[in-house]
Amino acid sequence: MSSISKFQFKGYRIKKSFIELEENSNFDNLKISFKVSGLVNQKDNIFLLDLGVNISNQKEDLKIQVDAIGTYQFDGIDKLEDQEISTFFYVNSSALLFPYLRAYISTLTNLSGNKSVTLPTMNLTSLGEELKSNTKFVAE
Image (cartoon, rainbow, N blue to C red):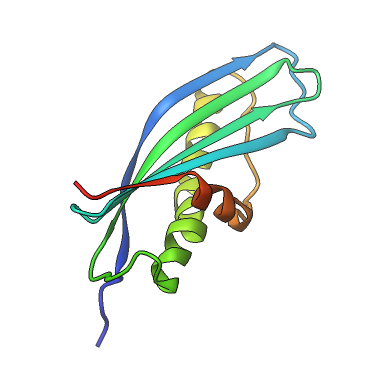
């Protein structure tokens, strides 16, 4: 018998979207950076992930910034320090949200009449420690 996960991705929304491309922008050797922060609402069992993606090229004539909020629900957790939930919060939550941002960026650049920017699939486990240090907890 299957059981429902204690941690579920409920959806996302784009908070900020910015694109600036010159006509002859170079799409090779893109620089990709991330910023992450989180908010845990213990009363409502909700985790909000704020994930930002910044993309540029070496000439700085291509700039893309997308910030999104991912919503996750968790159930049946006694302690948030629990190893299972901690792994989901700090490691897996970014990996669950990133494909949506990746597709959004590809679609946005394609529909703008420019060459499409298709980001590679990426291992975001390195964001876990940054997210852990940038997560706030509210009990209200």
